[in-house]
Amino acid sequence: MSASVISFQVAPAPGGHRFNVQQRVPVAAASEIVFYLPIWIPGSYMRRDFARLLSRLTVRDQGGTLIPHSFETPSRWRVSVPEHCDELLITYSIYARDISVRGCYLDHERGILNPCCACLAVEGMEHLPQRLVLALEGHRAGWQVAGAQTNSDGAYWFDNYDQMIDTPFMFAHELTILSFTAGGVPHDIVISGRCWDYDHERLRRDVQTVCREAVMLFGGLPSMNRYTFLLHLGDNLYGGLEHSCSTLLMASRDSLPEPDNRGSTRYAQLLGLFSHEYFHTWNIKAMRPPEYRHYDLQNEQPTEMLWLFEGFTAFFDNWLLVRSGVITIHSYLELLAQDIARYRQRPGRHVQTLAQSSYEAWTKLYNGGEDAVNSSTTYYIQGALAAFCLDIYLRAHSEDGVSLPMIMHRLWHDYHRSGEAIDEERFIRLTADLLPEDLETPLRGFLRRLVHSTDPLPLDEAAAYIGLTIHMLPAASNGDLGSDVPTAQRYQSDPGIRWQKHGNHYHVTRIDDTSPAALAGIAMDDQLIAVNGYRADDAQLARHLRYAAPGNAAVLHIFRDNVLHAIAFTLEPTSLDTCLIQRNSDADDITRMRQRHWFNRNEHN
Image 1 (cartoon, rainbow, N blue to C red):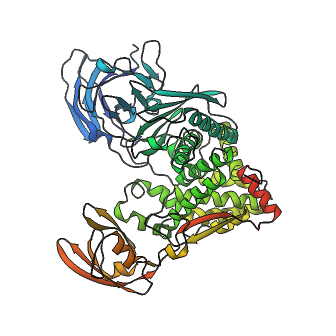
Image 2 (cartoon, rainbow, N blue to C red):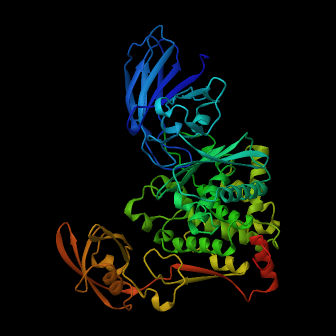
Image 3 (cartoon, rainbow, N blue to C red):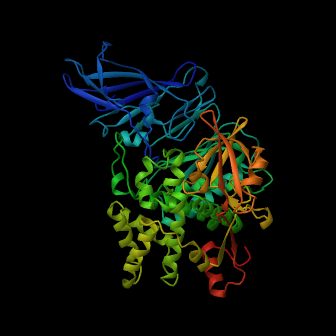
């Protein structure tokens, strides 16, 4: 082994959920080195502090003599290298029971290794080649491993530390592998986890179709030998994290396609997850904002540009599904309506702009606590709807000659040519170059409205341009995003609070801080005992707080800190925050043509 290589051996520990790691680091005698574990993983913008999972850390020289180490921070250590020592052996354990796309997981049947939270970086040596051996022994000997290809020596080799932490591994006694080609590159869907019978061929075919649509949009893939989707199945799972040549996905087994070819909302959501993370291959892994040209893994690293790199990706994920034909227009409109409902149901959209949402992701989106819905918006949903509005704006101001897909294609090829990171000004310039010169100022104003103001998004105007009509309606149940039920079955009033049942009790889980209930004194986590003299249950709470006429009085008996309170307030009219979208049957021929072109369909589909 070369003296300029950092080497890892990662082995499942006997019993429990733990990896044992041995790391060899070439050093200069009588020097000092600093090593650290990242506090976050690229693609997930929140402090994770992976060092909380690290224990049993020791440092020895090549002869086995223990060397003292000291903390600089909870995620960073310093070692003084003794005389006549040219290699350090660092050993430690990583607790591995994080069933998420960001961490490590291990049980007796399968495992996930994210090197970002399991492999220490050596400061100043991140550029060196990294060698990783995954030592599967005992009953795990012979297990299948997916995520990277081993070298002839049985190890995984990486050009540098960043490349290693960009390569998750999945391993199990048995992995299902579905293969196809897109953009001239082999692709694999690798599936881990028990599940009932599903339509393997439909999943393979649909994902291939979506990938080919994405490749066609950008005009080619970034340079790679192979692309791998790693899909970890379980119950009540959903999530994904993008990497340069792969993505790690979590999904519920009941989201897989049924053998009888029935469509389902959960399957459409699974395809959207594949589509979203694959789109990131270009939009954040290849072309990046200036802040992420180089990752600072020891510090929070905010950017205002997540509205483009995450929000626009969240628009294209479902749009690629309908454009490629793997879901129907009806299914797409349901998904779009759900996003509009979620946007309308979040009061924080009046408080935080898209740019602020991007920058404050570290403290608000993932870690905002119980008040996040009132104090913040989400660059995923609002960013996706802003992309929808911008796409229609570009089409409407260019006689349908310019579109957002065209802009994404241009961004990619400009990046491929120049290597320049993409900030807001570059995005505007590259977009304005395709429009008449006198439209640059209006474009800047429109983008400023979308990204830097809390003004409502012009969704109705955008939908009308392609022959769609948005209907905002009262909810028909808690969590309703767009049910098609008669008006008589919909809520009439809104108490300004939401509640959930925990065990045998109902607790306030959300409150609009400007509502009469909040102003009267109702607070988060209050235990609801009775409403208007009736014991609190699902039926009584709905009858007296949601179906009662606006203007009626409501009296809630609540426990707070084991003290009984009676609080009265007046019900307000319910808000119109669920959504149905219909195709306008009265649209003129030009609008119908725009709609067919936008959906990539003929008149009857």
